[in-house]
Structure formats: C-alpha cells, structure tokens
Image 1 (cartoon, helix red, strand yellow):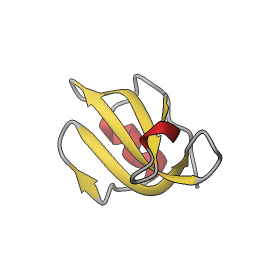
Image 2 (tube, one colour):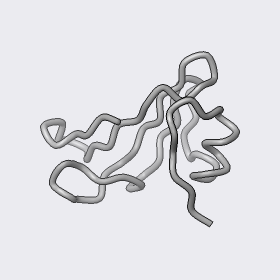
Image 3 (cartoon, helix red, strand yellow):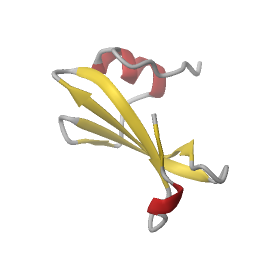
Length: 71
C-alpha cells in the first residue's frame, strides 16, 4: 500500500509510507526513482529529517540539479 509523505512525520512513519530506505544516513533517506523532477521525469528522492522529524524532501535526477524539486 502506498502512502503520501507529510512534513512533520516521524522516521518510522516515513518508512511505513515509503518502505525501508536502501540508504539511511541518519539525517536523510535516499530512495531510487521514487519521485519526479520538475520536468515530470522519474527522479531519486531524498528525505531530510531534523531531530527525527521529516523536514522536507528533494526529487532530483543524477546530474540534473536544475530540474530538482524541493518539497
């Protein structure tokens, strides 16, 4: 079941919504091709946490920072 991300959710809630991240650096989770850039292309999604709470996320294809979308 797919769920949406909401700023302010806990890390555990983010994992329940998006699944276990392949890359967990502590303050961020990285998901391959789980978002969309501003051109509508599939993009990698990085979730950023502050004090264990989702502060926002960024969708960006590798090598295409001009197309990044910050949420």
